[in-house]
Length: 399
Image (tube, rainbow, N blue to C red):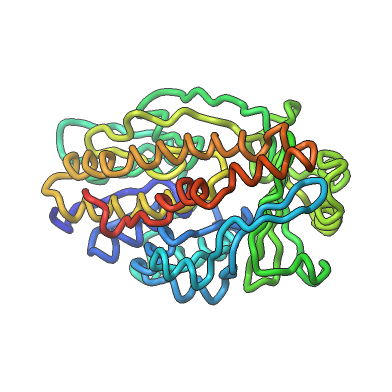
Protein backbone atom coordinates (compact mmCIF):
# COMPACT_ATOMS: atom_id res chain seq x y z
CA UNK A 1 0.00 0.00 0.00
CA UNK A 2 1.15 3.55 -0.64
CA UNK A 3 2.89 5.04 2.38
CA UNK A 4 1.11 8.31 1.54
CA UNK A 5 -2.16 7.18 3.13
CA UNK A 6 -3.00 8.69 6.51
CA UNK A 7 -3.87 6.56 9.52
CA UNK A 8 -5.70 7.91 12.56
CA UNK A 9 -5.57 5.98 15.83
CA UNK A 10 -8.10 6.75 18.58
CA UNK A 11 -6.38 6.07 21.90
CA UNK A 12 -2.79 6.34 23.11
CA UNK A 13 -2.67 3.28 25.34
CA UNK A 14 -0.30 0.35 24.94
CA UNK A 15 -2.12 -0.89 21.83
CA UNK A 16 -2.52 2.48 20.15
CA UNK A 17 1.10 3.47 20.69
CA UNK A 18 2.51 0.11 19.60
CA UNK A 19 0.44 0.25 16.41
CA UNK A 20 1.56 3.83 15.79
CA UNK A 21 5.20 2.92 16.29
CA UNK A 22 5.01 -0.13 14.03
CA UNK A 23 3.37 1.98 11.31
CA UNK A 24 5.74 4.94 11.67
CA UNK A 25 8.74 2.61 11.41
CA UNK A 26 7.28 1.44 8.09
CA UNK A 27 6.97 4.99 6.80
CA UNK A 28 3.23 5.59 7.21
CA UNK A 29 1.64 8.93 8.07
CA UNK A 30 0.12 8.39 11.55
CA UNK A 31 -1.81 10.57 14.01
CA UNK A 32 -2.81 9.37 17.48
CA UNK A 33 -5.71 11.07 19.28
CA UNK A 34 -5.85 10.66 23.06
CA UNK A 35 -8.77 11.91 25.16
CA UNK A 36 -6.71 12.54 28.32
CA UNK A 37 -5.23 16.04 28.51
CA UNK A 38 -2.01 14.62 29.95
CA UNK A 39 -0.59 11.11 29.68
CA UNK A 40 -0.36 10.31 33.41
CA UNK A 41 1.19 7.38 35.28
CA UNK A 42 -1.72 5.02 35.89
CA UNK A 43 -2.13 1.29 36.31
CA UNK A 44 0.25 -1.16 37.87
CA UNK A 45 2.06 -4.27 36.65
CA UNK A 46 1.98 -6.00 33.28
CA UNK A 47 3.39 -9.38 32.35
CA UNK A 48 4.97 -9.38 28.90
CA UNK A 49 5.64 -12.93 27.79
CA UNK A 50 7.87 -13.97 24.87
CA UNK A 51 5.12 -13.33 22.30
CA UNK A 52 5.07 -9.71 23.53
CA UNK A 53 8.79 -9.13 24.05
CA UNK A 54 9.45 -10.23 20.47
CA UNK A 55 7.29 -7.28 19.41
CA UNK A 56 9.13 -4.90 21.74
CA UNK A 57 12.29 -6.06 19.98
CA UNK A 58 10.71 -5.36 16.59
CA UNK A 59 9.73 -1.89 17.81
CA UNK A 60 13.25 -1.14 19.00
CA UNK A 61 12.45 -0.80 22.73
CA UNK A 62 13.21 -4.24 24.19
CA UNK A 63 16.63 -3.39 25.61
CA UNK A 64 15.26 -0.24 27.22
CA UNK A 65 12.36 -2.26 28.66
CA UNK A 66 14.74 -4.83 30.14
CA UNK A 67 16.62 -2.07 31.96
CA UNK A 68 13.53 -0.94 33.89
CA UNK A 69 11.58 -4.20 34.20
CA UNK A 70 12.10 -7.36 36.20
CA UNK A 71 12.98 -10.62 34.48
CA UNK A 72 11.61 -13.34 36.78
CA UNK A 73 13.19 -16.75 37.22
CA UNK A 74 9.78 -18.45 37.15
CA UNK A 75 6.22 -18.62 38.43
CA UNK A 76 4.74 -20.63 41.27
CA UNK A 77 1.40 -21.63 42.80
CA UNK A 78 0.74 -21.14 46.52
CA UNK A 79 -2.23 -22.31 48.57
CA UNK A 80 -4.29 -19.56 50.18
CA UNK A 81 -4.36 -21.06 53.67
CA UNK A 82 -1.09 -22.93 54.30
CA UNK A 83 1.19 -21.24 51.79
CA UNK A 84 2.13 -24.63 50.34
CA UNK A 85 4.07 -24.02 47.12
CA UNK A 86 4.20 -25.75 43.73
CA UNK A 87 6.32 -24.75 40.74
CA UNK A 88 4.24 -23.51 37.80
CA UNK A 89 7.00 -23.06 35.22
CA UNK A 90 10.55 -21.74 34.82
CA UNK A 91 11.25 -18.44 33.08
CA UNK A 92 14.49 -16.42 32.83
CA UNK A 93 16.92 -18.26 30.55
CA UNK A 94 14.30 -20.98 30.01
CA UNK A 95 11.92 -18.50 28.32
CA UNK A 96 14.66 -17.38 25.93
CA UNK A 97 15.70 -20.96 25.21
CA UNK A 98 12.18 -22.28 24.62
CA UNK A 99 10.42 -19.31 23.04
CA UNK A 100 13.23 -17.12 21.75
CA UNK A 101 12.56 -14.09 23.95
CA UNK A 102 12.48 -13.15 27.65
CA UNK A 103 9.48 -12.85 29.96
CA UNK A 104 9.30 -9.40 31.59
CA UNK A 105 7.28 -7.98 34.46
CA UNK A 106 6.99 -4.23 33.98
CA UNK A 107 5.06 -1.27 35.36
CA UNK A 108 2.42 -0.21 32.85
CA UNK A 109 3.53 3.42 33.09
CA UNK A 110 7.13 2.45 32.31
CA UNK A 111 6.18 0.50 29.18
CA UNK A 112 3.76 3.24 28.16
CA UNK A 113 6.48 5.86 28.57
CA UNK A 114 8.92 3.87 26.44
CA UNK A 115 6.39 3.54 23.62
CA UNK A 116 5.36 7.18 23.90
CA UNK A 117 8.94 8.43 23.62
CA UNK A 118 9.67 6.05 20.74
CA UNK A 119 6.65 7.37 18.83
CA UNK A 120 7.69 10.98 19.53
CA UNK A 121 11.21 10.20 18.32
CA UNK A 122 9.81 8.91 15.03
CA UNK A 123 7.47 11.89 14.63
CA UNK A 124 7.30 14.59 17.37
CA UNK A 125 3.76 15.71 16.44
CA UNK A 126 2.23 12.25 16.10
CA UNK A 127 0.24 12.37 19.37
CA UNK A 128 -2.49 14.89 20.14
CA UNK A 129 -3.84 14.89 23.70
CA UNK A 130 -7.17 16.29 24.89
CA UNK A 131 -8.81 14.92 21.74
CA UNK A 132 -11.71 12.59 22.58
CA UNK A 133 -13.03 10.73 19.54
CA UNK A 134 -16.80 10.29 19.72
CA UNK A 135 -17.51 8.66 16.38
CA UNK A 136 -16.91 8.83 12.65
CA UNK A 137 -18.54 9.15 9.25
CA UNK A 138 -17.52 6.88 6.41
CA UNK A 139 -18.54 7.56 2.82
CA UNK A 140 -17.87 5.76 -0.44
CA UNK A 141 -14.67 7.69 -1.11
CA UNK A 142 -11.27 6.93 0.38
CA UNK A 143 -11.59 8.93 3.61
CA UNK A 144 -13.05 8.63 7.08
CA UNK A 145 -14.21 11.73 8.94
CA UNK A 146 -13.44 11.54 12.66
CA UNK A 147 -15.70 13.34 15.13
CA UNK A 148 -14.39 14.85 18.38
CA UNK A 149 -16.13 15.84 21.59
CA UNK A 150 -15.29 19.53 21.11
CA UNK A 151 -17.11 19.60 17.77
CA UNK A 152 -14.02 19.54 15.58
CA UNK A 153 -13.44 17.11 12.73
CA UNK A 154 -10.47 15.42 11.13
CA UNK A 155 -10.02 13.09 8.19
CA UNK A 156 -7.85 10.08 7.47
CA UNK A 157 -7.74 7.17 5.05
CA UNK A 158 -7.90 4.63 7.92
CA UNK A 159 -9.31 4.86 11.45
CA UNK A 160 -8.20 2.44 14.18
CA UNK A 161 -10.25 2.35 17.38
CA UNK A 162 -7.72 1.64 20.13
CA UNK A 163 -9.85 3.49 22.67
CA UNK A 164 -10.19 0.78 25.28
CA UNK A 165 -12.91 -1.23 26.90
CA UNK A 166 -15.47 1.60 26.64
CA UNK A 167 -14.59 2.26 23.00
CA UNK A 168 -16.62 4.98 21.27
CA UNK A 169 -15.41 3.68 17.91
CA UNK A 170 -16.72 0.18 18.69
CA UNK A 171 -20.07 1.62 19.68
CA UNK A 172 -20.23 3.68 16.48
CA UNK A 173 -19.45 0.55 14.46
CA UNK A 174 -21.64 -2.03 16.17
CA UNK A 175 -23.84 -0.31 18.75
CA UNK A 176 -23.77 -0.65 22.55
CA UNK A 177 -22.07 -3.69 24.02
CA UNK A 178 -23.59 -6.02 26.61
CA UNK A 179 -21.23 -6.11 29.57
CA UNK A 180 -21.93 -8.69 32.26
CA UNK A 181 -20.66 -8.50 35.82
CA UNK A 182 -18.60 -11.61 36.55
CA UNK A 183 -19.33 -11.67 40.27
CA UNK A 184 -15.69 -10.83 40.97
CA UNK A 185 -13.95 -7.64 41.96
CA UNK A 186 -10.23 -6.91 41.98
CA UNK A 187 -7.85 -5.11 44.30
CA UNK A 188 -4.53 -3.76 43.12
CA UNK A 189 -1.66 -2.03 44.82
CA UNK A 190 2.10 -1.52 44.82
CA UNK A 191 4.45 -2.11 47.74
CA UNK A 192 8.07 -0.91 47.97
CA UNK A 193 10.12 -4.10 48.38
CA UNK A 194 12.15 -2.52 51.18
CA UNK A 195 9.05 -2.74 53.39
CA UNK A 196 8.80 -6.51 53.00
CA UNK A 197 10.79 -9.39 54.50
CA UNK A 198 13.34 -11.19 52.37
CA UNK A 199 11.06 -14.21 51.75
CA UNK A 200 8.65 -12.00 49.77
CA UNK A 201 11.31 -10.36 47.62
CA UNK A 202 12.18 -13.30 45.36
CA UNK A 203 12.32 -12.56 41.60
CA UNK A 204 9.38 -14.84 40.92
CA UNK A 205 5.70 -14.51 40.10
CA UNK A 206 3.22 -16.11 42.50
CA UNK A 207 -0.40 -17.14 41.96
CA UNK A 208 -2.12 -17.71 45.30
CA UNK A 209 -5.26 -19.82 44.76
CA UNK A 210 -8.20 -20.35 47.06
CA UNK A 211 -11.95 -20.97 47.26
CA UNK A 212 -13.69 -17.90 45.90
CA UNK A 213 -10.57 -15.85 45.22
CA UNK A 214 -6.95 -15.64 44.16
CA UNK A 215 -3.96 -13.30 44.41
CA UNK A 216 -1.27 -12.58 41.86
CA UNK A 217 1.96 -10.92 42.96
CA UNK A 218 5.24 -10.23 41.18
CA UNK A 219 8.18 -7.81 41.22
CA UNK A 220 8.49 -4.65 39.12
CA UNK A 221 11.13 -1.98 38.42
CA UNK A 222 14.27 -4.08 38.78
CA UNK A 223 12.74 -5.67 41.89
CA UNK A 224 12.10 -2.37 43.69
CA UNK A 225 8.29 -2.79 43.82
CA UNK A 226 5.91 -5.68 44.43
CA UNK A 227 2.75 -5.69 42.33
CA UNK A 228 -0.35 -7.05 44.14
CA UNK A 229 -3.62 -8.01 42.46
CA UNK A 230 -6.28 -9.74 44.54
CA UNK A 231 -9.48 -11.12 43.00
CA UNK A 232 -12.43 -11.98 45.20
CA UNK A 233 -15.99 -13.13 44.51
CA UNK A 234 -18.12 -10.20 45.64
CA UNK A 235 -21.27 -8.70 44.16
CA UNK A 236 -21.54 -5.32 45.89
CA UNK A 237 -19.06 -3.34 43.79
CA UNK A 238 -19.71 -2.74 40.09
CA UNK A 239 -17.45 0.24 39.30
CA UNK A 240 -15.16 -0.60 36.37
CA UNK A 241 -12.73 2.31 36.83
CA UNK A 242 -9.12 1.54 37.71
CA UNK A 243 -8.83 4.67 39.84
CA UNK A 244 -11.41 4.05 42.58
CA UNK A 245 -9.54 3.96 45.88
CA UNK A 246 -10.46 1.56 48.67
CA UNK A 247 -8.91 0.95 52.07
CA UNK A 248 -6.43 -1.55 53.45
CA UNK A 249 -9.04 -2.56 56.04
CA UNK A 250 -11.62 -3.44 53.39
CA UNK A 251 -9.04 -5.23 51.26
CA UNK A 252 -7.80 -7.28 54.22
CA UNK A 253 -11.38 -8.21 55.12
CA UNK A 254 -11.85 -9.66 51.64
CA UNK A 255 -8.95 -12.03 52.33
CA UNK A 256 -9.87 -12.95 55.88
CA UNK A 257 -8.21 -16.21 56.97
CA UNK A 258 -5.74 -16.11 54.07
CA UNK A 259 -2.05 -16.73 54.74
CA UNK A 260 -0.16 -14.12 56.85
CA UNK A 261 2.08 -13.28 53.86
CA UNK A 262 -0.99 -11.91 52.04
CA UNK A 263 -1.89 -9.71 55.00
CA UNK A 264 1.66 -8.46 55.40
CA UNK A 265 1.58 -7.28 51.79
CA UNK A 266 -1.85 -5.65 52.11
CA UNK A 267 -0.73 -3.82 55.26
CA UNK A 268 2.11 -2.21 53.30
CA UNK A 269 0.09 -0.99 50.30
CA UNK A 270 -0.17 2.81 50.42
CA UNK A 271 -3.49 3.00 48.53
CA UNK A 272 -5.33 -0.10 47.33
CA UNK A 273 -7.59 0.43 44.32
CA UNK A 274 -10.61 -1.67 43.46
CA UNK A 275 -12.60 -2.36 40.34
CA UNK A 276 -15.32 -4.72 39.20
CA UNK A 277 -14.45 -7.39 36.64
CA UNK A 278 -16.86 -7.05 33.75
CA UNK A 279 -17.04 -9.75 31.08
CA UNK A 280 -17.89 -9.20 27.44
CA UNK A 281 -18.40 -11.76 24.71
CA UNK A 282 -15.74 -11.64 21.96
CA UNK A 283 -16.85 -9.70 18.91
CA UNK A 284 -17.49 -11.75 15.76
CA UNK A 285 -16.44 -8.79 13.60
CA UNK A 286 -14.06 -5.84 14.15
CA UNK A 287 -13.94 -4.08 10.81
CA UNK A 288 -16.14 -2.08 8.47
CA UNK A 289 -14.56 -0.58 5.36
CA UNK A 290 -11.72 1.69 6.46
CA UNK A 291 -12.42 1.43 10.19
CA UNK A 292 -11.21 -1.31 12.54
CA UNK A 293 -10.59 -1.98 16.23
CA UNK A 294 -7.56 -2.99 18.27
CA UNK A 295 -6.79 -4.17 21.80
CA UNK A 296 -9.39 -3.85 24.54
CA UNK A 297 -11.75 -2.10 22.11
CA UNK A 298 -12.40 -5.43 20.35
CA UNK A 299 -11.31 -8.17 22.76
CA UNK A 300 -11.42 -7.00 26.38
CA UNK A 301 -10.38 -9.90 28.55
CA UNK A 302 -10.31 -10.86 32.19
CA UNK A 303 -6.79 -10.71 33.64
CA UNK A 304 -6.38 -14.45 34.28
CA UNK A 305 -3.93 -15.39 31.51
CA UNK A 306 -1.81 -12.21 31.71
CA UNK A 307 -2.28 -11.60 27.97
CA UNK A 308 -4.19 -8.32 27.68
CA UNK A 309 -1.16 -6.14 26.92
CA UNK A 310 0.41 -8.88 24.81
CA UNK A 311 -2.68 -9.10 22.62
CA UNK A 312 -2.61 -5.32 22.07
CA UNK A 313 1.07 -5.46 21.09
CA UNK A 314 0.35 -8.34 18.70
CA UNK A 315 -2.58 -6.47 17.15
CA UNK A 316 -0.44 -3.41 16.51
CA UNK A 317 2.29 -5.29 14.67
CA UNK A 318 -0.05 -7.47 12.61
CA UNK A 319 -2.08 -4.39 11.62
CA UNK A 320 1.08 -2.64 10.41
CA UNK A 321 2.16 -5.73 8.46
CA UNK A 322 -1.22 -5.94 6.74
CA UNK A 323 -1.33 -2.25 5.82
CA UNK A 324 2.17 -2.59 4.38
CA UNK A 325 1.35 -5.73 2.39
CA UNK A 326 -2.05 -5.11 0.79
CA UNK A 327 -3.02 -2.65 -1.93
CA UNK A 328 -6.16 -1.16 -0.40
CA UNK A 329 -7.07 -0.21 3.16
CA UNK A 330 -10.32 -2.25 3.33
CA UNK A 331 -8.48 -5.37 2.10
CA UNK A 332 -5.65 -4.84 4.57
CA UNK A 333 -8.06 -4.41 7.49
CA UNK A 334 -9.99 -7.54 6.59
CA UNK A 335 -6.76 -9.55 6.54
CA UNK A 336 -5.75 -8.03 9.89
CA UNK A 337 -9.06 -9.09 11.44
CA UNK A 338 -8.86 -12.56 9.93
CA UNK A 339 -5.31 -13.03 11.23
CA UNK A 340 -6.18 -12.03 14.78
CA UNK A 341 -9.76 -12.89 15.67
CA UNK A 342 -9.45 -16.65 16.30
CA UNK A 343 -6.44 -16.27 18.62
CA UNK A 344 -7.84 -13.38 20.63
CA UNK A 345 -11.22 -15.08 21.03
CA UNK A 346 -9.47 -18.19 22.36
CA UNK A 347 -7.53 -16.06 24.87
CA UNK A 348 -10.67 -14.30 26.10
CA UNK A 349 -12.41 -17.63 26.68
CA UNK A 350 -9.31 -19.22 28.23
CA UNK A 351 -9.00 -16.34 30.68
CA UNK A 352 -12.56 -16.87 31.85
CA UNK A 353 -11.87 -20.59 32.31
CA UNK A 354 -8.85 -19.82 34.49
CA UNK A 355 -11.05 -17.92 36.96
CA UNK A 356 -12.93 -21.13 37.72
CA UNK A 357 -9.65 -23.03 38.07
CA UNK A 358 -8.14 -20.49 40.49
CA UNK A 359 -11.28 -20.28 42.68
CA UNK A 360 -12.27 -23.94 42.89
CA UNK A 361 -14.11 -24.91 46.13
CA UNK A 362 -11.86 -27.99 46.40
CA UNK A 363 -9.09 -25.63 47.54
CA UNK A 364 -10.85 -24.97 50.86
CA UNK A 365 -9.15 -27.93 52.54
CA UNK A 366 -5.42 -28.58 52.26
CA UNK A 367 -5.89 -32.32 51.73
CA UNK A 368 -8.21 -31.86 48.78
CA UNK A 369 -6.11 -29.00 47.45
CA UNK A 370 -3.03 -31.19 47.08
CA UNK A 371 -4.74 -33.60 44.71
CA UNK A 372 -6.49 -30.77 42.84
CA UNK A 373 -3.27 -28.79 42.22
CA UNK A 374 -1.33 -31.91 41.30
CA UNK A 375 -3.96 -32.66 38.69
CA UNK A 376 -4.71 -29.17 37.30
CA UNK A 377 -1.12 -27.95 37.25
CA UNK A 378 0.64 -31.09 36.10
CA UNK A 379 3.31 -30.32 33.51
CA UNK A 380 1.38 -31.47 30.44
CA UNK A 381 -1.69 -29.41 31.35
CA UNK A 382 0.43 -26.32 32.06
CA UNK A 383 2.11 -26.65 28.67
CA UNK A 384 -1.26 -27.04 26.97
CA UNK A 385 -2.50 -23.84 28.62
CA UNK A 386 0.57 -21.67 28.03
CA UNK A 387 2.83 -22.92 25.22
CA UNK A 388 0.47 -21.84 22.44
CA UNK A 389 0.42 -18.35 23.95
CA UNK A 390 4.17 -17.93 24.26
CA UNK A 391 5.14 -19.66 21.00
CA UNK A 392 3.03 -17.35 18.82
CA UNK A 393 4.91 -14.84 16.66
CA UNK A 394 3.15 -11.75 15.36
CA UNK A 395 6.23 -11.25 13.18
CA UNK A 396 5.79 -14.56 11.34
CA UNK A 397 2.03 -15.22 11.65
CA UNK A 398 0.24 -15.68 8.34
CA UNK A 399 -1.55 -12.55 7.14
